[in-house]
Length: 360
Picture 1 (tube, rainbow, N blue to C red):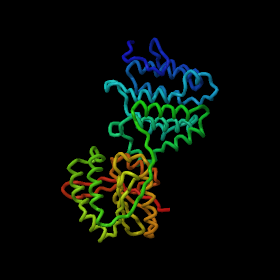
Picture 2 (cartoon, rainbow, N blue to C red):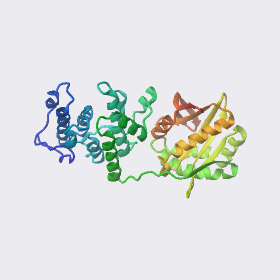
Picture 3 (cartoon, helix red, strand yellow):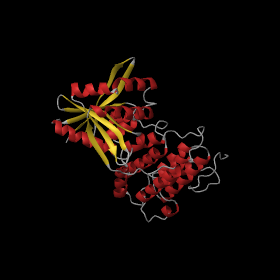
C-alpha cells in the first residue's frame, strides 16, 4: 500500500503499513510492547491519510499505565506532543480528521476500567489540546451531552492537578510541553491578568454600555444568531432610554467592568426577582478580554450584589449554541434548570438554557 502523507516527525518510522492485527496480537496486555505498537500503528495510519484513526491509535497508547522508569518512555514519550502536532498540522479536508474535541469529550465522560480515572484525565488533557488548537465553530463540543449529563468541562488547573495526582509517569510535564509547543506553533499569546474594577453606574453612563454592546455583539454572535437578529436586539435592548427605564421600573443594576489602563472592557446588568432570585440579564466582555478571568470576577461581583439585595440564587439565560459562555457558567457552579424559548418580536426567538446557582 502506498503512503499518501509524509511521515509524522514525532512517531517511529515504518517501512510498510502496521496492520490492526499487530495490535490484536497483544491480547489484553497493555505493556511496553503494546505501547510501542500503538505508536507504529499511528504512524502507519497517518501516512495512509487517516489522521482520525492515527489519533485513536495514540489514545490506545495512553491506555497503558507504564511507570516512569519504563525504558520505552525514554524512546517514545507519552504522546501528547505527537497529538498536538496532528492538531496543528491537520491535513486537507479529504483526509478525515473528525472532531477531536468532541471525541475526547466523549472518551473522558465514558471511560471504563482498567485505570479509568487516569485515562479519564488523560482524555481531558487531550481535549484541552484540541480546544487550544481547533476553532470552536468548526469543531464544536457536544452541547447536547453537556446539557443532558450536566458535564462541566475542566479548567487547565483541574487537569494539571489530576494528572499530577494520578500519573505513574511524567504526564504533567509532557502535557505542559505539548501545550507550550502548540501555543508557540499557532502564535497564541498567553493571557495575562490585569488589575480590574467593577462599579455600578447611573443612567448618565448607559451610552458606554451601548457602545460596548455594538462592539461585542457583532464579534461574538455571528454563527449563533443571524445578523438581522443581532441588529434587532441591539436596537430594542440597548437604547440608553430603554435601559434607563429598566433601572427605574424594575430596579435593574448596570455596572461597567474596567481594566487598568484600558477603561471599560465589558458590562453587566442584574435585577431582583421573586422568590429570592437575582437575575443576570447581561454579562459581556470585549473578545480580547476573554480568558483573562474577568468573567469569573464579574460573577463573584454579582454574588456579592445579590447578598446585598438579600437574594439567595443567581439565574441567567444563555443561548443554546453559545458554547464558550455555557462552559464558563458551568465552571462557575451554575446548573441547568430548563430549556426555554421566547418570542421577542419581529419573527425572532431566544432559544436558551436557564441556569442557576446558589449565592452561597
